[in-house]
Image (cartoon, rainbow, N blue to C red; front, side, top):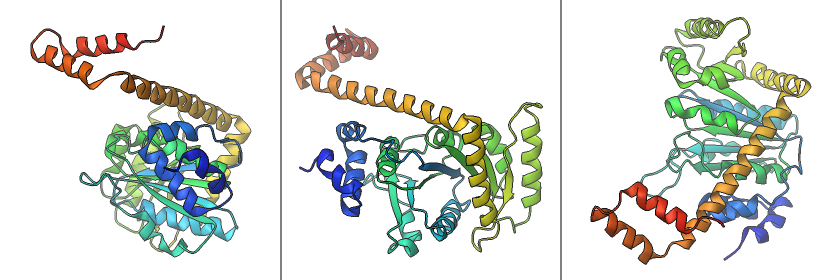
Length: 315
């Protein structure tokens, strides 16, 4: 079996096959994901990570594709991680953003990867932080995280990205859903896509109204209108993203966000390693005995879990 440590040097030198296999290891094996954390993620400190989230059907993939085109016109390299719904049968991704973005298939400056969310409620695969680390170390200048829209728990993307774009569409009551989901708090930029449809101006107005409810000190993210299907407004979106990056860097907030993300990654890796250690410490016979004691009414499931944990607690 090929290990992450064997694939990493080739992947970071530009071998796309090795890069793909390395990312597959990250998705499938928590130990490999922990091993990936040894890769120097500061190799390309200038890498910008943008989250693109919103409801299904809001045009996120088309919008992402348009942004990729503009970035490539500036000769900037781009990696896209499209976190898709998980097939209940195969565990694989369903939406297939790589198919939708196949115009970039022959472009060596673009790398597109669909990752299944594996039922992870935030719409973000647990492997995404390590995938971002790998792609950053591989030297990509932009990493775009496009997530599956899963409603009120979609805010997790903000913890993985430098800045977050929330995509809404007119006529679906998106302003109400955004408020409920907490997207008002995590969005750095709102995009009302499909702005040629009726109700676009109403959606923009409602968003502005809701943003004022937080008081005079509340954040006021920009609100842009786009039509991703024909590219209208996408150049302004691209320019706004670049401007926001400059503002975040100058204020020191970008560094603060990256520090918070690194802290969360360290905790996640520690948790992963601890879980692997614990699971390896329990024999089938021991777990089976606990199951029988719970079934017999001697223990509650929680008491059995505590007993197992105490058997393997450090020191």
